[in-house]
Length: 244
Length: 306
Image (cartoon, rainbow over all chains, first blue to last red; front, side, top):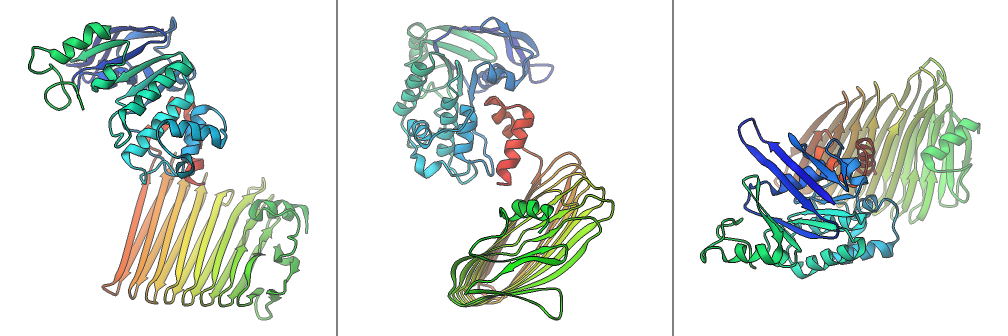
């Protein structure tokens, strides 16, 4: 179980990105964190992965206080993290990256399995460098494949739907389902997408650095979709969560 | 051939002992430690200066020629001129590494001048790996010069690698390309400690539709210093591209000095240079996969210089 206790992250002295955020994520749960842009969602994800250090508060992983641990130690304790904007490397190939994620060498068949899960043909990609020659959609899918190869008990996806071009949401949802099946772990997904919100066990709404709602999807989602009959309180564009 | 030469040969040419069924000349401390020719590749000693002539008959296909040079002890100052005459239509691989072992206090150096005369429609893959080994305080120095003339429709690819142990290197490459000729250079370089490495490319694109593509990837660690100079002269309709991509670490420094001269409106010339430290987000990404910062750094450099 992941537990955040009173997490505060400061941008500067005057205003916090996260203010006293407390949250419990039980094992095996699929939790979607949503909310307006700038509300602190990505920061929260980075705090869990150890990339951003909180100014105050504690992070517990299965009861162990991991607040003081770095990125590597948390990764080794079973935290997986898929970046919103995947990193490019000159020279490292798709095979290198997926093998580093898996923690050892993989057969072509295994590589093929991970890549076909994200809709890529292994033969076309395993020897390609993860560099600027890949499109935004391609690199995003490779990022997801690398996180799948880790099979961690807690996997965080920061806006996985952003930039996945022609690859359908249905496949992305398939990835989440497969990951839950294979790892029996928890998934935390940051998303604005209605179709991703619809398959969550729980929804967390984070706005202006505080949790404004957290509960089972059935309780939270209707309020997000209907609002006051006009538009939702938050939206990446202007009016609400994305329906397309 | 002494034991140190055997070790160096394996490092620079991946040879264990002398090559079989291939032309070769093994240079050891300024002398010849073994030589063989084949029906299509003749190797003979020069009479007027130190070195050899390598003549590849027109139409020779698929042969590999090994021309490694080894310096095995301290205080050696080797100078050699090797001339390669590649016949029209030939297609060969030339493996020409150099290893310097220095266990003493005096400096040891190898200065190799390779001249290539590449015939019409001939193709050459030139592989050159440089290493320095030995515990001595004497400097290990390798100064390679490569002079290339590629005739109509000819092609040459140079893969050069220097990853460790060479204290000082000054590489000079000069090339002139005739009609439809192409030159591709891939340089990989890593320097440590107080090492210095200087690369100086100059290519004249003289023939119509000739082209060159020079790419250098390097890592400068410790307080080492590298200089990358590239000059491309486009004298006619042609394409030229050079790129210097460098990672600096610790107190390392790199200078990239490109020069492009287009003397024809149809000359298309490009230079790119990027010098900087390893991006923090690259380290972060690999650390989220469970690598330590040091392991991540090593993987990034290994990939970069692969």
